[in-house]
Image 1 (cartoon, one colour):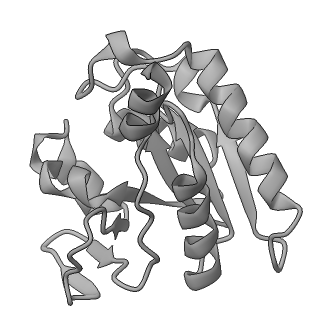
Image 2: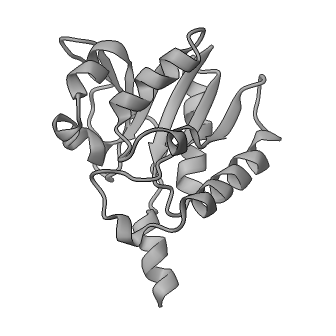
Length: 178
């Protein structure tokens, strides 16, 4: 089974996350997208995060509502897999542990363009590039015209045709404060 890991704080999850997940399932050879709720992202300020169980419940509710209308048996899943791993949550560790726990699956990674721009700061990014395909979602209104960017270790697919969702969790939190 082909599974894409869509990791994030999901603080909170919103229609852009779900819309992107649905679009990727419909436009790639992917069977499932796992929304991997990160309890502790090392590149983010933990003090602004809602409780991890609360964030996971939000993701679970959002994906369950959307699975009723998914075509061809494709599925969005909420995952708390990282809750049981050492913290902070490093994607390379998560992917290793997923391979051990589910050797029958092939895993890929879905990240936003903002994370792609700082990917070289990720712990063991070379390991990730060497072993897992990466799908990059353009987060800005400016789109790169390249659909596929070959790298020395693996491949990166730039989802240039994905719909642009003009929303962010940061924006939602700021509106909630007001």
